[in-house]
Image (cartoon, rainbow, N blue to C red; front, side, top):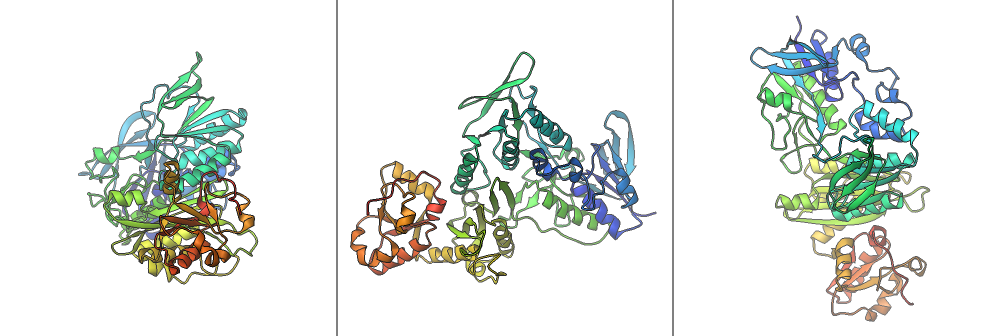
Length: 564
């Protein structure tokens, strides 16, 4: 008889673990248990199915060859027994048995195992908001939810939809609903949407969302849902006012599904997920866990975290399946990587934000630059706004955030590799990246930002971000602002109150810049501003800064061009 392997959970990590175990051990007896009917579907693709980018439901359920991953597929192709519509209600660790019953109830049966793999996933978190059970207060967890949501939007074009939660799912669904012609409002309890980003980057995403017709209500709590006499939603009451709504989506977060593990007495981590080692082994050596139910080791911060992503779930599932059949494999952890498509923009981040680093007591230095993803002369080039974060004590790269219409995610991926290898900012700047004009600048935006951050760490210049500068301007404490762009660029608007001296004239007109007080210089991206800072430094100016990202990263309204 082969090794008896039981896998609980049939969406991402579970099927991956089962399939990996089968490939390594043809003799193993593998049973996969799944609460629902559908198996191994692309849960991360649900918003794109609702919005129509994924045209057919079966695409989420099938292999690249178009074969549906159903019970028959796993039996015939994988030789894996699937018990779908079946719930695991308990684990007898001493007897090595799983207690199961059908979803509809019935007699509890016992399923023996030699090795058990838990892949119970995550569950949505729903605050106790009055009225959340009204008709058309929707969720998006399963394929059936997406079916209902898509059908409703198709049948009710142009409705007013309120999305509660401005995280990944909330923003993906905002785009999907706008694609369906809905009037969309996103309500976020925190000060800004996309809370995985620092505020200075998130505000740029917010500006793009508003440009695409999405209304945002931030720093507000949903207090209740209101309905009519038929029990249908009519409005969402927030701490900032009432929003009319024909439908609402609860997208307020997730938590690891650990009830079965907790009931079995397995150790949980500080983040609430099942504690595992690098071999995906739990506190019971015969039980492994993988996917959204586990706590991840963050390789940047060195602590546990919760990161529910299909990519991570598949990697962990593969490792758990390998080790369950005695093939040593390990998963060292995650870098906290997140990618998000927001209409025409790409949004990515990894590592620590400045706010997170501050909470860990790390003294950071960061810098935001703007550059093109390809040379200015190559067709189709688009800007990337990129922020790097370094630990001032050792100059190690600990965070990256990138937004914009350009290819941002490629740069995030490179930075993840660098952070995993614990590289310094200088080592990142020295990376030999692949280059040709169709793919990047000769000096890639990531390398440009790393070099600039190295200069800042060396004290060669000081900088100020858009949010900080705007707050000073609003408080009547604006520094002397100097625009060094061309006349044609200035015609489209400048920062309010700015003086204007083109870069080419700065050496001869430097006397127009006051030596007393603080000077902030900007251009389109602040590349020329850096040149201007060095020019003035050479002329003896000591209190000169540049505006990070220049006009391209300025999320506020511009004023009229200054008089020539």
